[in-house]
Length: 178
Image (cartoon, rainbow, N blue to C red; front, top):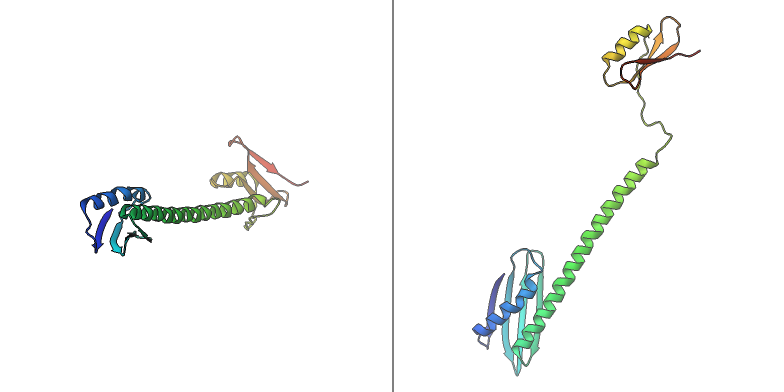
């Protein structure tokens, strides 16, 4: 926190500087990054005016109050600044939360849409059916590591057959129409 105190028609004493620094600790807890504070104190007629600007990378906050007592004016400024900062932080958190909720809802909608698809053909694979013997089909299926079945035209019967791997991983099954 970088504090610059300027006095117009009024001298910024060490007591005032210490008081301002002590009071600005209430505001400091709201920021992770370094920020600048410009404080201007002045007198007009019989009133003491304190003006504070808190400047961060994202926002600038300003408070100006007048009171017969300068310390009371500084206290009011701190209260105003703290309220402005808290309001901005709450608003930012709410927007961030809504964005995360919207993102989460979008993901849920996409996930639910994927779940809702049932009893539909989702993928079609085209390949040539070649006439081969069931033993040759078994050898060909052994060579195809990623596939669990192979459709072929049985040379003995002239009908379409399917050979498939059983769950034990060692044996095969044959589907043959009657």
